[in-house]
Length: 222
Image 1 (cartoon, rainbow, N blue to C red):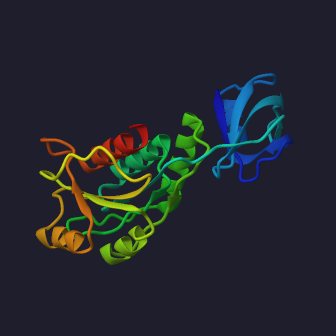
Image 2: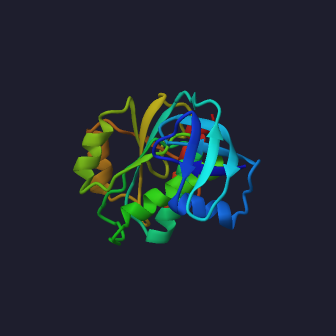
């Protein structure tokens, strides 16, 4: 079932314009077919295409439903290579991450991230996966700012090889994911001084994007 993202979703007839309407044409979604619509804020519906035109299409939404958010996942990935960061954001959005806060660490690859492109990747992911929650994505300026943001969550963890293999976390948790090359000794000390708990994901060294997906899956699906 094709997914559609709308800033404002309402019961009744919704007008589909711009890029979302172009997708209907490219995917050949015809009148009479059902589609999934969401505003990314937990509201969604199963609608039916009434009319598909070049500029504007119309979709009937008989009932807007509200999803319940049972877990809140915040990812704090140290900035790594752009295309792999985009892939990680896409998969984290599919899995239900609520917040994604990239930040520069000592060993980060200092590429200029396009936040609008990351948000677009997240929108495409929630449409494909029928996830009614769009994660908030913001680029942070430093580790210090990231640690301050993490104070909003009940559980605070950093991924690091050799740490405890935890499998249970508070329903509101933040995870710091290191860049290629891992955390420096100074950063690990900062985490411990701020009472973050170390988490290990296995014996092998995972790439940053793999770690993002692994911890997202572990947190959201167990």
